[in-house]
Image 1 (cartoon, one colour):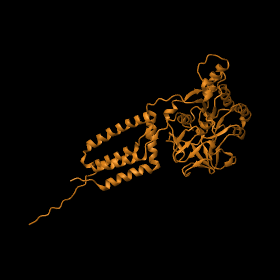
Image 2 (image 1 turned 120 degrees about the vertical axis):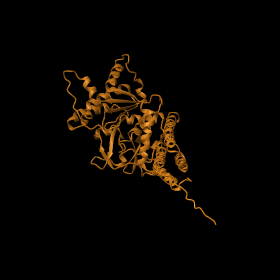
Image 3 (image 1 turned 90 degrees about the vertical axis):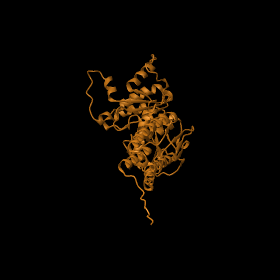
Image 4 (image 1 turned 180 degrees about the vertical axis):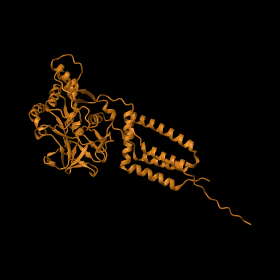
Length: 410
């Protein structure tokens, strides 16, 4: 006679609790979420952000053929554009007077380019709201005091989960920093995490905004005092927008929102600026740049995920966060798996395997529909892991039996 095993029920419940509490296992959940987000059929309106990608190929095409030189290979060459090339971008984009101009790469040049750097500064001083990237790190010689960095005064909640820094690892010269607003470009150490982007950092005990959050604040003309931060819960902007954040200060972005970002090459922007200046018929309509955030990025930058900051800005603008279901749903899944374990030995091995395949396929389709329609994420790794565990137990184990004692009476 077959009967439920209390030990198997207990193991299923403990395994489910471990999956919910172990951060490394939650990273597997993020991998599932990233795949589902990239494959969900969602159509979003155009975001108020334009991404301009600039690379050496742009300037190679502008050079006469007889003067062109072979491009150097290697990672450093792709990131070593000169101040004149950045100044050319600023000159072109200023033709359309965007609300915010954000430079994602950290503008650091060798000493031999110091003369050209003044050309860039002259153009940068014309930008009303210029955001430049900085990278936080350990203590250094050119660190700023906490009072010199814009921080949030209205903060509640526990700070233990935020990334902590005491200095800068990379930053522009003081001449550039004084005419711009800093935006911190640090990303999580997990290279596999493509959908979580930091919104907040802790710098010498103060809570400071990241690059995309600072861009949104400039776009909304908001100061840190206008923003309310509830650590582990949400960031409330002065216009009523709410950014849901995790305990570590990151937000789960929607990669689909990145598809609503307009993308331009530097050559396209230069052509549009020339046509606008000379009142020629535009080949690309970019007149609405005046109301947008323009983000500059180095093309094929090996040190940054592709357009992750512009996708973050677009997610905030479109309010298309994919929210997880309530914690009770996860525990319902765990209890359902525990209930299934009670009848595990009554199901044939073939039926259990086929049922598991059908369940995973149907559950995946349900998740895609929930993301596309309601921007809701159902736990995926949890039910798949528990079901796989039960399948392995059924295929490898033996059903428990009850021994009967037969009493013989004379």
